[in-house]
Length: 194
Image 1 (cartoon, rainbow, N blue to C red):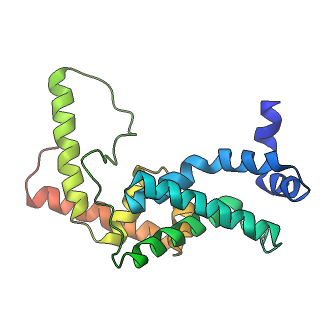
Image 2: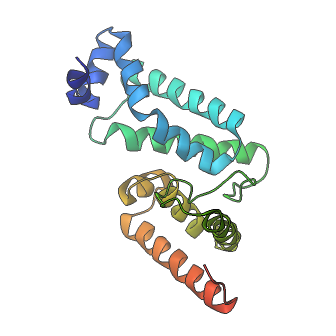
């Protein structure tokens, strides 16, 4: 049964939901929950706010589906990511401040990298390197920082990033290239040993 659920496309689940099968929407949400929530959290940096926006995003999805306004030309995930991104921006507009990826001390864009465990000294050096990298990331322009964090921490593809940020894939790739280049310059400038 599980393989059947995995093989069912998003479009088929939408059709089933519109035909009255409520569990189809639950499967859609479960399938994309991690990426949508991550993209929201990367912008708002607050778990409670991210959960509220996540729920608002799927309420908007439900309303749009029920009203028959969903356009099947695009893919479901990029559409939901765009809704979530717009709701996140709206949240900051309401508070009269723009989003930053700066985050708190628990925020680590490199936490999902699969690094080998080593000695205690290796662990301390790794933590120090990550702290230095987080500091460098804070000095990047917002657009570059956003793409870098979505790619490394969120695991989003450049296509998904371009859909969320509503820019072309080439622009997303360019921002990533500039972000990495700027980080290299800062590492050289400050003679950091990572």
